[in-house]
Image (cartoon, rainbow, N blue to C red; front, side, top):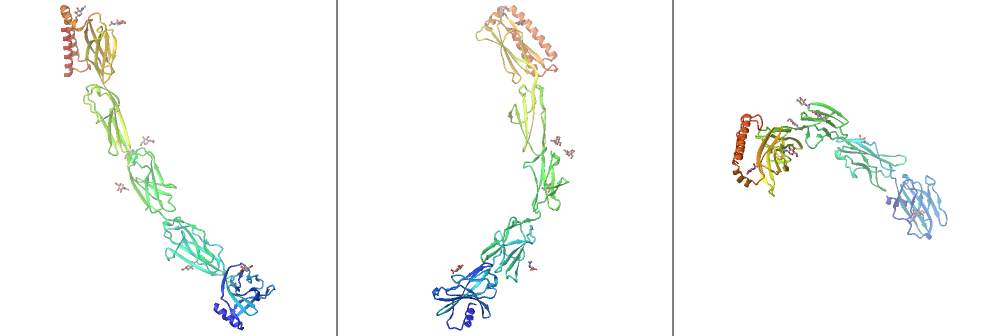
Amino acid sequence: MHLSASCVCALLISALFCEVTDSSSVSSLYGETVAIPCKNKDIKAEDIIMTKWKYDKGQGLSGDLLVRQTNQDAKVSATDEYKDRVSMAKNSSLLLSAAKLSDQRTFICMVVTATDVKEYPINLEILKVPAGLKISDKAEELAIGKLTKLGTCVAQDTNPAAKITWLKNNKPLEADGKRIVINQSLDVDPASGLSTTKSTLEYSAEKEDTDAQFACSTGSFATGELVSPALTLTITYSTENIVLQVNSQAPVVEGDNMTLKCVADGNPAPTSFNFHLKGELVKVENADTYTIVNVSRNATGEYKCSLTDDPSMEASRNITVSYLDINLSPAGRIGKPAGDPLDLTLQIDSSAKSKVSWTKDYAKLDKEPKFTKLAYSDSGFYECEVTMGPLSRKAFFELVVEGAPVIKKLSKQRTEDGKNKVLICEAEGSPKPAVSWSINGSLLTESPFVNGRITHKITVAPSENLTVSCTVSNVYGTDRKVINVSPYDSDSDQTKLVVGVVVGLLVAAVVIGLAYWVYMKKSKQGSWKTGEKEDGSSEEEKKLEEKVEENSQKAEV
Ligand SMILES: *[C@@H]1O[C@H](CO)[C@@H](O)[C@H](O)[C@H]1NC(C)=O
Ligand SMILES: *[C@@H]1O[C@H](CO)[C@@H](O)[C@H](O)[C@H]1NC(C)=O
Ligand SMILES: *[C@@H]1O[C@H](CO)[C@@H](O)[C@H](O)[C@H]1NC(C)=O
Ligand SMILES: *[C@@H]1O[C@H](CO)[C@@H](O)[C@H](O)[C@H]1NC(C)=O
Ligand SMILES: *[C@@H]1O[C@H](CO)[C@@H](O)[C@H](O)[C@H]1NC(C)=O
Ligand SMILES: *[C@@H]1O[C@H](CO)[C@@H](O)[C@H](O)[C@H]1NC(C)=O
Ligand SMILES: *[C@@H]1O[C@H](CO)[C@@H](O)[C@H](O)[C@H]1NC(C)=O
């Protein structure tokens, strides 16, 4: 092209001294005033006689624009469309206002000196940047796997024509004809010659495209890259996974409120569900939960949930409602006669295996208590605890072993100073027996009532020989024993006793008689203990024998 321009020049100017310097090009923005420089640096300013601008009209023709002669203003010589748009700058540049596409041609600066004529052709290029990239016909949402027209990107009125690329998360999308289809079209306005590029993107979304940003770009365009505002779309997809959840992490326990939750994915998420409660169908709308209050063990079974609009999307779950019931017999406070057996039963009704532990008076027992023959020491507060996982139940009974009191021992001691006597009455029985003496003494101590035993001590100061009795009694009966007390030391008493044989024998006779009478009476009635038993047990008999022996010893004394 430059070559042909110089040929034209050569043809036009027949003068031998026609010279054409290297042409170059200059670009400018559409609509603005262009300054096209005259590249005459090789000529001294004072040598210039005339500077003239013209342009290449094609077909070997040129059009005059304007001329400037030494010390004169430039004169416009153009008569065509350039007439009102051209002027010359001091530095000889051609100033062309309101540049348009048709101005893209070769302009020639001709400089005449006394000895030479030189021409400097320059190509003018006009650039037009789009006002901005816009995406129109935007899709609202993309269904996964469905080729959908995402939008059309328009680069309006450009020069040169723009080439549009689509971006996803700032990375170019390559059309593959299947998942990504890009269709680009170009329109040239016949009047202005400006190009309008339209690019349509059809896109088949994946789940990962949720929150992806789409945009279109001109790539590297004349004045730099232009990118449209980003576009984010809703990615829609149908439910792929459905799960039935139960509110509590721990096992569901009888009496709990059980909330079933149907968790399904999909966008938009499903809003209504069918709950299948062991065969019963419940439809829930605008919620994904269903609560059964105060579940009973009957609620154990298979539960399901499904989508109302796609029953094949279904989740199921077997739910077990845990329960633990215990029944302890005896319960509460119970009184039982000493010597009797006591049957203990602990019934456990539970949904799984349970563990049992026992305490007596809050101290741990190794195993379940057994009572074949109740002793006073068996009395106490018994508690059992049954546990099954997080569940725990407690039951208790308070056992009081009861019976008529029996005097185990009646004895005497001297006080330390030797002046007085201490009488000691030891008895067993429950409830706590009342202890009384046949003599006025001062109470020394009364032991605590533990395991049915009590010890009662009094101090007496006898002024004469006495027969003192201790009587113990509660609601079940009474027992009495007697002891002889003299004001003297027991040792000296014995020696002195020998002297009063007659009195002694008399007393002995009376005592034996009394003892025999007591024995006969009690064994006949058999009522000294329980008042019911006709034939006393061997133990009772032994006790009686002991008693008689004691009495006869006294009698001997
Ligand atoms: C010549 O002058 C014009 C207007 O004054 C200016 O725009 C242009 O840059 C100048 N050119 C050179 C090569 O100095
Ligand atoms: C895109 O391509 C199809 C066929 O390949 C054609 O029919 C259509 O006109 C093209 N242009 C647009 C903007 O869709
Ligand atoms: C729970 O149900 C049981 C019977 O299944 C009933 O005895 C109990 O009172 C109920 N509890 C509440 C808090 O409704
Ligand atoms: C549990 O089921 C039994 C029979 O299956 C029924 O008799 C009873 O009333 C039910 N109890 C509750 C609390 O639903
Ligand atoms: C629930 O139990 C039934 C019967 O035992 C069984 O057929 C079913 O597969 C179970 N369902 C689940 C989800 O475990
Ligand atoms: C004990 O003393 C009281 C008065 O202090 C008297 O009334 C009572 O008869 C006395 N009892 C005996 C058994 O001596
Ligand atoms: C009291 O008993 C003692 C023997 O224990 C006897 O020596 C004494 O004579 C008795 N006194 C009276 C007054 O009976």
